[in-house]
Length: 383
Image 1: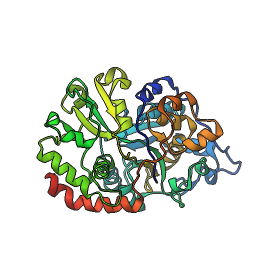
Image 2: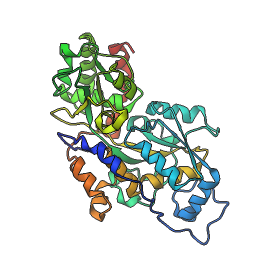
Image 3: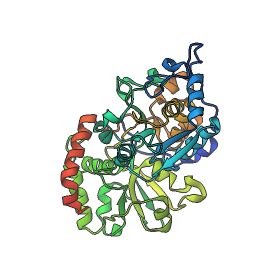
Image 4: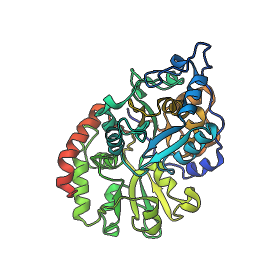
């Protein structure tokens, strides 16, 4: 899929503060034939299990939902989680390893299989998803038909949720001239200052920084080797910083330049309020933009299968899709919401129109890229 955008309004994150989470649409009503003996771990839709009322009742009885690798500042997940707990007060959300990677999600699902602590749901990058489809349960939310066909699997194992753009965040009190692109970061002003979000062999966000570097240096979605070579040059120049950046490291000045998703850089700056770095600015590099939808999926061995399915219904409600949008993360249902009038028009105006030509790796390209990274990244970067 090809999309594009040159600028991203910083007001996007600020707009998030203006949104309050309204009640999630209940979707289908309960069927008179619903049964308390329904096995939600195998149900492929709410309707099949007796309707939304039956699903809510079963989730309430479970009383817990385990999520993983969802930092509160990431795509508005702090507000999204709080909204779920407010709407469904009998269900407690346990959020584990918020700064973890897609690979950590899979590792937790495998190592904690059969335990009450295992993740119920995934918010996961495509390359890692494709290598672990056996971990995903089949389920289609009530709004399934409103999501474009190429944004979801035909069997219901995964569905896109949101995308941002690869961007450069920088501390303007340290970096006096705004970088125009990744090539700018090879300059002497960036000595020991450039970080990415983890190891590209494990984290989709970090891998996407490599993909963007490939696009800037003569590569493509099918050839990411120039991106690996770029980071080798960044290290040779002494500009590479092997530190996992967080809001804390940005605020302390430890990581003054971070290549990451636009919605995360926005969240770490002034739009993040008192917790943000007021000097933090976001640049979407000139040239070809790169994005990547993350995927929602349910753990096939979810310890709280009804709560997991209720979470998915909640995620694809207009209220939550609008919260993604307010964070600068374009939701999968945006086109349908614009058409049916459920999009928050004031937020959309602040964020800007949906991108039209971002490069996004296909499933097979992401798998090939992951294979190349696993063989070349450590040799190039020593990690």
